[in-house]
Length: 546
Image (cartoon, rainbow, N blue to C red; front, side):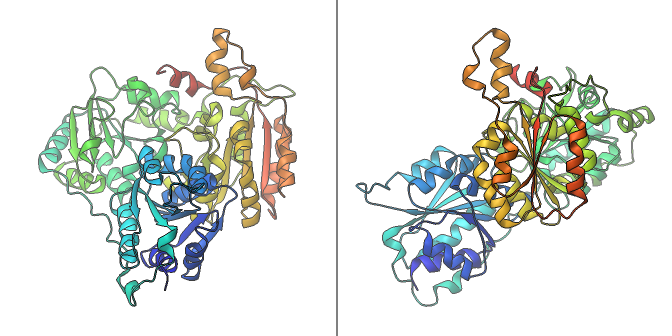
């Protein structure tokens, strides 16, 4: 057996079941070996899309995924998606062919590229060590929550692997849950015992098995309100004491209640400028606690009064066991009534800015939330528009929202939703994009149609890079570089085999309801011509920190 085949088979034996990619000569044999060993391969139309699909699949499924690319340009094309995954600490293996001869036109320093965006590298160096090194790459991804570049040099691929080498291949052990430090548990228990208005903010580290149940039990015991960062949105869906998102996408009531907290506990949450609105959500007298299983994360974004190193679920359970009798805390009848009436942004009155030619993005989002099935998985691109789907489209749980925003690149939203859709095939996938990101990633509309995904693609079309328009426009700067002539994005969708509708008014949304009613034999693209007179509320908050 040659190294290329052995590496592909070893990846599958190590637990990889899903691979995305664009196949060239350098990764042809190894990708086919993965398919032969039982992996599902999804061919993207661009390596950047493949990397983002793999990232979203890993986030939404909880399983390690692989993106397979050609040497040199195949890897450089994928780098933005890889950077997003690395910054998000997504368990992902980037399988890249590699040339080692500097005179080759395909040569780049692939290891340096990976380091530059925060990924780690493993290289297959010989037939004798190929299987061991491949399994080590998967182990790094899973056990250290890292994005790993597995370089597969072309001269090594044709080497022979010793007989029986594949017998060594096996899935890595699960990442061990970090036992919380006893002093931290005691200190947090005492703080909760004294608190009258506690708020829990759960982040990415709370999404694991048992995280929700442990946090809800502790919150019930101490009367805490429950919020999430954007990446954990949906974790407390259906809980009557949930504030939904904390930060720029939060409702006025959620902000008011978080600002009124005397104790804020971040559970596997960075408490960064986005989640805390540059610190404005933290009251002057509030005590801030952060729980994380990596010591380096504690206080990384803001000072905290107490940092507790430990797994979220284990820490919450131990604090609960030490916590004593139930307290009312922040859960008064008045607070409960307010949450029921106006914690959702869609329940907050607003002045509808719709015209005959353009629909208010709030009106669009509220209407879509009502007509689209509740069992959905929502992927969101980046841009001025992004707060509307993030705050107005409900999701059934934390696996129903995929938010690839660690690198803040536009153009990832469609590929994000493809990866999330394949991880949650029983749900309706909804891709929420701006016109800039939609056209940047439009090539993957072909992938949606080819896979037969019953996806809804919503384009919030303001014919501009809206964030720049609303950031620089008020100061009188020329905006010709960030505005564009009208584009019939619905026609683009039809060209890829989508059903498509242009929406200017609420009446135009009847076509969406008709599509939902069935048979959904083709995906649907909604080209929504949205009001562009002012920036979104969350953007105003974000720019205060620039």
